[in-house]
Image (cartoon, rainbow, N blue to C red; front, side, top):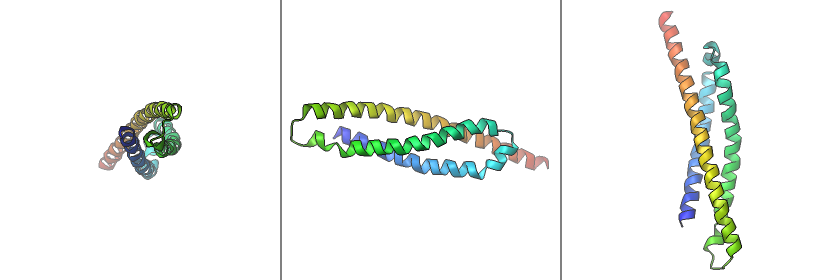
Length: 131
């Protein structure tokens, strides 16, 4: 049951990241001209590239976790399949590391995007006040 709960938590978080990715994409589109005007495009471009790569990784990771969750039956059936059960546990441990690495990398990129957009908004307000 612990494996199931952990997999469900990953699925929930990954699905939330899909929503968050849409929000970040929208925010970047909304502020693209302001980012270009603020001469921060070269700063933003690598972060946007990283987010785009993360979006592709997110889809792949979501599929892996869903498949892993579907294979949980191996662990709960009453059939003794030691090799398959051990393989499942190994896969679970590997997947756990992969999910956590993804979360860390994604949160870092998200934080950078928010910092950049915040700076852009501040500069835009300052320009407006000066005009």
